[in-house]
Amino acid sequence: MKTVRLGVIGGGLMGREAASAIGRWFALEDYPVNLELVAVCDLQPSLLEWFRRVPTVRQLTRDYTELLSNDEVDIVYVAVPHNLHEEMYMRVLQAGKDLFAEKPFGIDHRSARVIADEGDRLGRFVRCSSELPFLPGAQRVIEAARSGRLGRLLDVRAGFLHSSDLDPAKPINWKRQIATCGEIGVMGDLGMHVVHVPFRLGWKPRSVYAQLVNAVQLRPDGRGGMAMCDTWDNAILHTTINVGGVDVPMTLEMKRMAPGETNTWYIEVAGTDASVRYSTKEPKTFWMFRRDKDQWWQKTDLGFQTPFKTITGGIFEPGFPDVILQMWAAFVAEREGRLGDSFGCVTPEEAVASHALFAAALDSHREQRVVPVG
Ligand SMILES: NC(=O)c1ccc[n+]([C@@H]2O[C@H](COP(=O)([O-])OP(=O)(O)OC[C@H]3O[C@@H](n4cnc5c(N)ncnc54)[C@H](O)[C@@H]3O)[C@@H](O)[C@H]2O)c1
Picture 1 (tube, protein in one colour):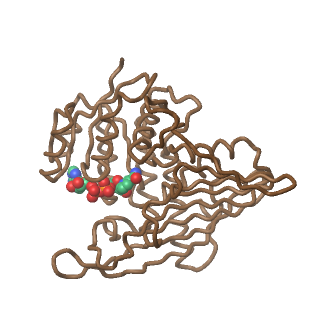
Picture 2 (cartoon, rainbow, N blue to C red):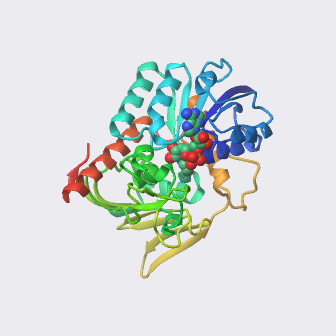
Picture 3 (cartoon, protein in one colour):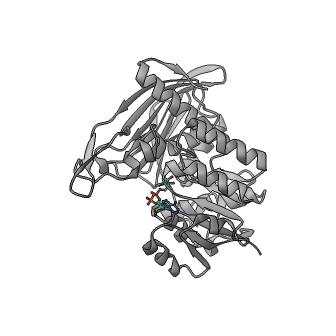
């Protein structure tokens, strides 16, 4: 079986999550390519030490240019703070490697455009991370929306909700400051997860009215003082999409401060003939609305119907590490030209479109008006 080899830059939360998912590559069934993690770069020696537990890793370095000079590496996954995306993504592409980028794909709209253009110019395979649409419930929503059986669309609502920032004593980190996270704040953190499915269904906003909230503006700096927390905590984007010549409202929510929500991703699509909804709050449950004499919300228990078949039994329930594996399987399959009809990772054009939306949202909030997107 063909083996492709991966290097990771940034061995923090997501770098290790990727290593853990790829470590179960053998669980994929009837899958044509093997993916092996061979090289890791991080600035922190303790994290590099952690990667010694991955038997295939042969290079550990604190200098990412050394990893890029490694001829063994075919693909590079970069999971670092947003202010470093542009420089590192460009260097990956220029080193002749394919790129699996973390969101938000550059710190702002300009940066995303520059990266996407370089990938095009050099003919590299580039995709961006967003794993939750690979959950079976999300896939059922996509299937229903594509089937045409929802009738005329009435509205779409999608969101991603966190709550750990509700605690004002939580120390600051790079995700809470413009310099490292970007002016778009929570939209850069959570937004790609929210727009991936709507964009893939062709639902790209034409206009946006944004409400942005920065609820906690100072946080402990971890050294006994306080630091400015200057990014947006919550964003509610009221957008308009056009589906079949008809304007449809689509509301997108991204919140770091949503009481009680630890990692809740949801999508709801309402139509005149049928409606669907799915939330990770009830991860096994897919809801479908139908009407005859009465009106019904039907609840279906889902199992392990992931896009890429694994050895896991069909009645078992998938979790976060499983969808990370599914996302990587989609990335590698598409790179090999073997994705077929399966759902794919975020494309550079979708990533750029997400930044266009978030940039318009910043304008909308500042000017308190509806802003065209594009
Ligand atoms: N897909 C998802 O669900 C998801 C979840 C969280 C974060 N992310 C994204 O992943 C990326 C990383 O986030 P994280 O939560 O893993 O952050 P993190 O802070 O846990 O990890 C970042 C790592 O980058 C390393 N680093 C910083 N500068 C470096 C350099 N010059 N060279 C090498 N390594 C360097 C740090 O030492 C750290 O270990 C961000 O783009 C973030 O938006 C995605």
